[in-house]
Length: 126
Image (tube, rainbow, N blue to C red; front, side, top):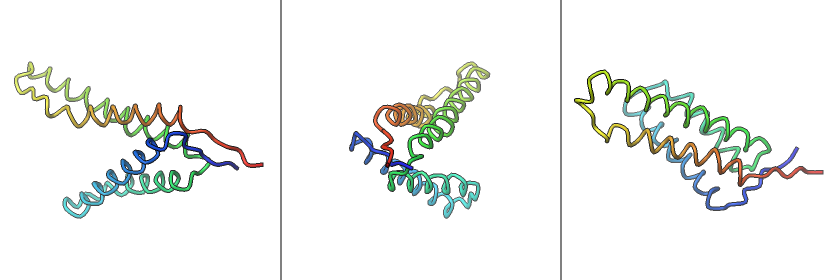
């Protein structure tokens, strides 16, 4: 197989912190809101965190797929949905605070996608 090498240690620690924060937020929501639909994202975040911590061979591809689907596409669709909702009421109830979290997560998804492409290299073992 091989091993994932993180060339940028700041990105590596940011990624671990980000995944831990997402994981803890979802676990908190399960206990407070009893939203058991979060079990799949929790399992996926634990899987990705394990891959990152073990420097697994598939870390780069899994990070790119996860960030593109669950962070970029999902939050882009949320932003578009909020814009369409605001357009339907002629922006009478427009509040920029409703967009902040979605835009932040979209930007973090873009950062994770491109940094994983640029800073993670796969070292093949012989």
